[in-house]
Structure formats: structure tokens, C-alpha cells
Length: 202
Image 1: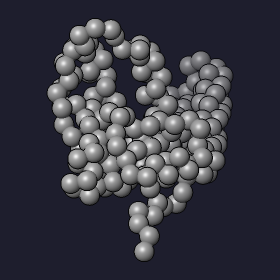
Image 2: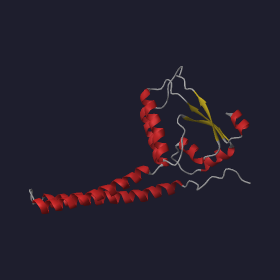
Image 3: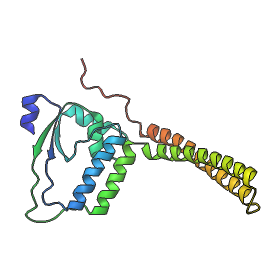
């Protein structure tokens, strides 16, 4: 890594594994799906198999340390700050002794931390679901009214009760969705990430 920094003049030298030899298949499957998901919904690009251990120039370290957020998903932060990164590939081998300190559920919690730290997609999905539900509620009311007008009311009181329940449910979900959008903006603001990172000063 030091040789890569000096020879190629990059800012970061990092390693990533090309295989997952010795890892349980279910864990490998979830890990691959996690990288696909976070790269799809977040504004960062995390290399599949990237390791946290890396060599960085002082300006990269200073940028990372100066970020004020407390919930730190290291892989996401490394990708977010940018800088010129050279990747060193290696093949994973099974441990000769000992074992990982991460349980499956600890990795799941860590993955969730990463998803919510770099994406407001879950909150935006709540807004979308609320809007769709409200539209369906209005369509449901129109359907119930038309059915009552054409075929009568086979069960007295049922159409009006369903209209009220469906409409109120749609309004509640839509309201939650609107609140979710505001929460997403607040969440982004309180992190106080810099608007940009200066790579080099003249």
C-alpha cells in the first residue's frame, strides 16, 4: 500500500477481496446484496469486498476526522470523501485459527446503519406509499359510490363505513409520508457534512 501511494501518487491505497473463501455462503449472499442495494439507493459507490484497512494521505485523514457526524459507517465515509483511490485486489483465504468477532446479526445492524446513514430512501418510500394509498383510497370511494348507485346497497352502511375507513387511512399515510420528507431533510442537515471537499489547494 505504501508503495502504491508513492509510485502512483494517489491519495488512498485500499484493498478489496475478490473471493469469499472460508465464509458461510449465506453471509456472502447477504453481503453481495447489501453492496448492490446501498450502491443503488445512496449517492456513493462502495466497492464490493472493500476492506476498512487502508493507507491514506494526511489530507484525506483530516477530512474524515473533521466530519462531525457520530454514527460512522466507515466504508461509506471513505467513499463519500472521494479522493484518488487505488484498489489492490487479493484473494481471501480461510483463517488458520480463531474466528471473526462479528456475528451475523451484528453485521445486519451494521448494514442497516450504513443504509440509513447515506440514504433517505426509506423515508422517501414511506412518502410514496402514503401517496399511492391516498390515491387508491379516492379510487375506492368512487368505486363504492358507483356500485351503490348501480346495484344498490346489499349490506346497509357498509359502503359509507368503508369509504370513511379507506379515506382516513390514506390521509394518515399521506401525512406520515409528508412528515417523512421533512424528517429526511432534517436528518441530512444535522449530519453537517461539508458541501464539498477541497482535494488540493493552490
